[in-house]
Amino acid sequence: MNAETDLWTVLVILGLTVITVLTRSLFFLSSRPWQLPGWMQRGLQYAPIAALAAVIVPELVMTQGEFIHSWQDARLFAALAGTAWFLTHKTQRQAVLGTIVVGMLVYLPLHLLLGW
Image 1 (cartoon, rainbow, N blue to C red):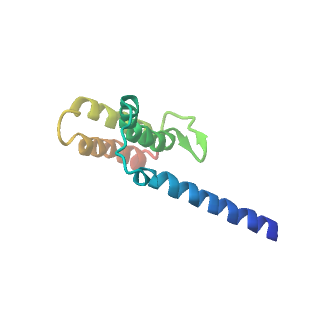
Image 2 (cartoon, rainbow, N blue to C red):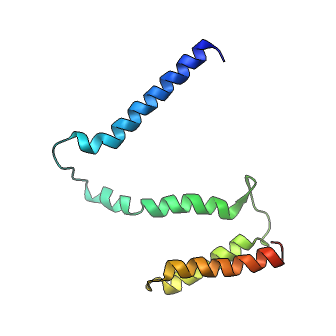
Image 3 (tube, one colour):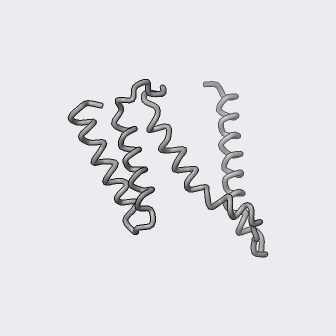
C-alpha cells in the first residue's frame, strides 16, 4: 500500500461515517414531527419479511456459493415442513416456535441418518 491509497481509504471511511451519522440522526435534527406517507408506512411493514427472506432463501437453495443440484437436501424438506406448519397454525400463539420445532424434527433425521 502506498500513501495515496491510505489517504483514499481514510477519505472513504470519513465519508461513510458522515453519511451514516446523517442518515441515522435525520429524524432527530428536525424539531417538527415527521409524517411518513401512507404508502411508505405500508411498505415499511414488509421490511422485516423482506430482510428475513433475503437471509433465509440463499441459505436454503445454495451451498458453497452455488445453487443446489439435488432434491436430496434436508434443508428443503425442513423448510417445506416448517412452512406447512406455519401456514396451518399461523393464528395460534406458538406458530413460530412450532415452525422451528417441526423444521428441526424433519431436518435432523434426514441430515444425521441419511446424510442429506
